[in-house]
Length: 403
Ligand SMILES: Cc1cc2nc3c(=O)[nH]c(=O)nc-3n(C[C@H](O)[C@H](O)[C@H](O)COP(=O)(O)OP(=O)(O)OC[C@H]3O[C@@H](n4cnc5c(N)ncnc54)[C@H](O)[C@@H]3O)c2cc1C
Image (tube, rainbow, N blue to C red; front, side, top):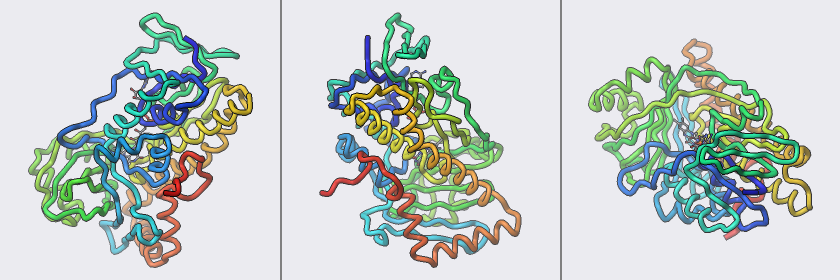
């Protein structure tokens, strides 16, 4: 089977790239080793993402937002960040940047279901799933993927959107710089005594940040509690009642008592960045290229912008009659995305140090920083626009349409 582009990895980033290349002249194959989990009918998916305004524009432009909005989505109208040790705090309000909200909280399985629904309607996209990739061969003029069932697929370009342990990255011989944070992110869905009022809350504790992200139900939140691995294991081992007491205390009682707690899971946290995003006839996108700390809620958003930029570069090159797998074409994508992503990996690492450190000088510095930023409207506005993805060199597909 011959394709123009083969994407290995049909997670949120790979599936969004396929949709972005939809209805065009390129023949695209999207491979995943596992079938997507169905969109949850009852109860919330444990994994959620804070989707920025730029990502929402991208999902809208590629025809997937309608499927998300039809299922479930919660707007974040304001955000409150504060430090357990001291007075420092900062408040962000969407009204200050003239936006209806700062971000949207969406369950990962809802995003995934909407993307798959969309790409199944695109005739130039071939979704092969579940399939096992037995061998990746990278040649000068084309790449080949041998599937475990004996089929052999060929393409002019191979995209690795296959997550943090990317097999495509390995096959291309691309190294990563990584830092094991010796932390875990605990995720769970909880209900609280007081409504969240569409406000996201993040409190910095000695052992790492704790976030309460609002869900569509006014009393339901998705929590992401990043803690040193030992502390995280202790928290995971507690029964629900004891965990609820710890959680209520950790968030400083901001939402009253914790009334119910769903299943909990812990994910090891690492910072990683690929030394290159491209190799001959190969490009990396999403977690295959970078993993950041979840405290900034940016991971999949960086991946969506990778997908939007890569799609633009490939479609422009194809329209100009260029070889989409040529080094010069792929370098354009790498130059566009690599510097900004590396800055975000480093920034979340620096925040992790600054807020995970209880030395008196560091504590005073971060409290001062939070207070100064809170009292300076231009800084607050800048931070909000940056976090919403509205600043910087946005790909065409990530720019909001005039309604
Ligand atoms: C606790 C936690 C909270 C987070 N919260 C946020 C948040 O609020 N906002 C945010 O933006 N990000 C968040 N993130 C990060 C976000 O979840 C990731 O950045 C995102 O899931 C990466 O998507 P991806 O498609 O690049 O990779 P993945 O989700 O890892 O998808 C990779 C896909 O490739 C497939 N695959 C892998 N290997 C192969 C192979 N050899 N052959 C075929 N298929 C293969 C897999 O089956 C999978 O479907 C969080 C992360 C954690 C751990």
